[in-house]
Image (cartoon, rainbow, N blue to C red; front, side):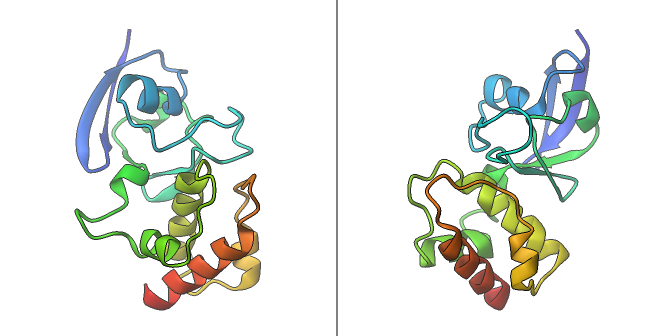
Length: 151
């Protein structure tokens, strides 16, 4: 079985896994990182959204082999120690979560957006394709705008 090394949330890790194993299964089943959620397995719901080298990915459709010698960040690695990322803080301040299932992916998508576009328009926010089954989109928008203002 091949082995793959990458940096996960700031720490080097090595896993033995088939090359075509989705990163989501490596994270959840092999490394016990459960923030990225399994929703659809085809990259549509985006409940698993994480970052690869700082860019947004859906680990359910990214092969572990494609992560070798790269940096993977999940919701568990977004905060800076005890200091929440501005998006995480805005999520709490705006009481965004309802059921909470999609929130790690929503937060990671918002953080990626703000990294790329520090002051997003409503159209930029609308381009986030993550699904929220509870329909908290208006609070998500408010939180992203708050995080951008406080960034």
